[in-house]
Image 1 (cartoon, rainbow, N blue to C red):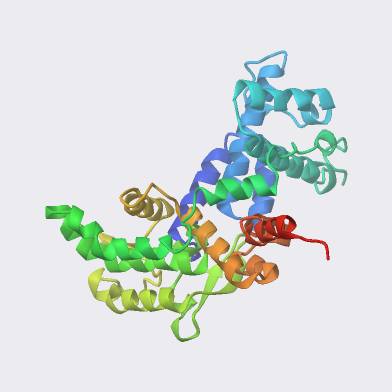
Image 2 (image 1 turned 180 degrees about the vertical axis):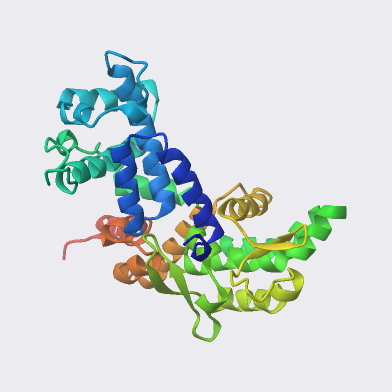
Length: 359
């Protein structure tokens, strides 16, 4: 199975196995079930971290606090009261200082675990492990910011107007003027790859996890399309701008020779270290993007490139459904943030009020 996983997924899977070994057996069972149902290893790894925090807290609430979390019986969960669950949320907010978004993620992961234990498990008598689901009574925290406020925050983090094009020009023309020696040699060796990578982010809106998993068989240059691996291991075809696909094609022509790529290496974006060719990791891509953007205006992430693409897509097309599909969102509501970034029509309407004259 590991041979069929990308290096990034394999790394996440190993981390998941390490984390779940510290948890009670029934939580291990839940994580294994979700893994077999093809839930993303990175998502499950985060779930495992949430559970470790929860069960560590639970173990300290018991009469024998020295009892390890791994040996906590599920009867403790079945006897939890709503006040206990709320006390845990207070712990996350007050003691740990977590954001509302992170607390909501913890609530969601616990809701999923408790639902499994109370509806989908089966003991020796064919019954669920227990039936009292206290987290079914716990609501997610209301967001402190509405869509318009979120849009304002995103607007400060993305390339405005044609700044993305200015950034791409900067990479090719001005950035190398700041370098010398080994730094300049390293730039010249990797700029075609790095430029194609950044251009593709800005020209398609794909996630960094989707980019590192791209294979040469996923690229359809003549159609300006990519087959990407979405969350949940679902394959989806997305469009890319012609300019970004041209940049990708330029890189693909030099990829094999520049990085000494063996025939069995299918990943598009690779590196060659110590004469070994390997796919770029998510962390490596984030580092590359951060390095270049820090020299331009301010340090940015691939996710902010995704925000930039989504904003420009909306302003150009005003099609929320196609934007949802392009980004791989499950709900059109998720794309609402980008529709709130465009206030031009609203400003015109407000100006019209001042200009209104009754006949």
